[in-house]
Structures are given as structure tokens and as C-alpha cells.
Image 1 (cartoon, rainbow, N blue to C red):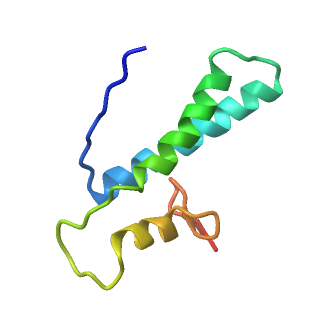
Image 2 (image 1 turned 30 degrees about the horizontal axis):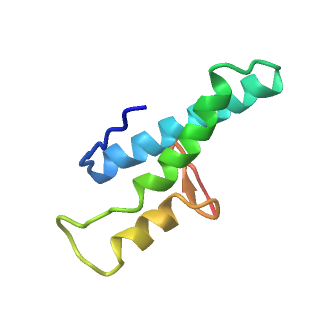
Image 3 (image 1 turned 135 degrees about the vertical axis):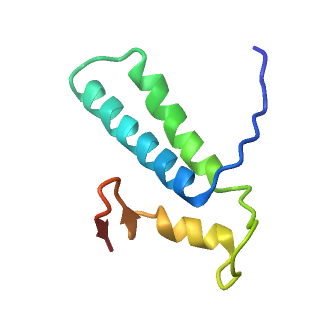
Length: 92
């Protein structure tokens, strides 16, 4: 199988929107799996988890202050303890 590498630059708001979309689709895939559907939801569910973990690995700050390491900040923002939902609600 041919493999490609993709590079993508996102600002904070784009990253928040992308993470929210990935999370919503992951939940949808989980619901479909519970209902008995397998394809393509099983493959998508596993891929979504890998994508979410990869998104935060090569983060670099391009502007603003550096009070926090950018990887640590995104890890905090998207961890299960603190989560910003698409509606703006937070938990944590």
C-alpha cells in the first residue's frame, strides 16, 4: 500500500473546530458500532483515535506569549479533564 505524509498548519480556532469535529464523528461511529453496523465505522473509529493523538505531536508556537509549552497547552485544552465543547461549555 502506498503511504503519504501530510503537513497542515492550523490556528487555535481551526484546531478547536477540527478536534470537536473529530470527537463528534468518533462518537457517531461508536453509536453505529453499538447498533451493529461495522463498515466503515470500525475503521473510521480506529483512524480517528490515531489522528487525534498525532495532531498534538508536532505543535509549534508561531506567535503570542510562551508562558506554556504549546504541546502542554493543547494537551490541557483537549484532555478528558478539561474539554471545550463546540457549544462553548467546559468541564473540568
